[in-house]
Length: 124
Image (cartoon, one colour):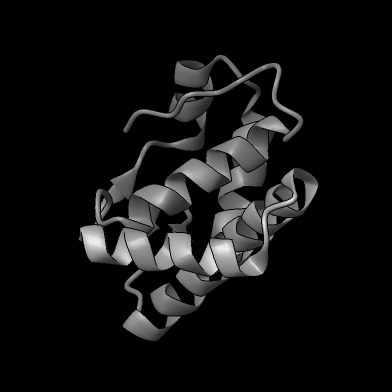
């Protein structure tokens, strides 16, 4: 499991860890019931404090992405497709908001944005 952290990012380290593990789960790189590194091992590998990895695992557990079993470890949760779809829709909405803001700043109309989406769809 490869996690790349940026010290210059505006996002806290634990959020970067959460985002990357969620992405690995969402794209199928991590499968249900796969084990994750222990908090200590992950902290050591990433050169961060155990508190940081604990916070990331707590967040992932709270969001239903992983299950932490005391004395056994952390595992990717068995998820249903509806949950994955909802999370993907949330991420897509966030990306569209960013694209829309950039388009407004650049004077690009909503019509042009829609045309761009249709063009991308045709390329697939």
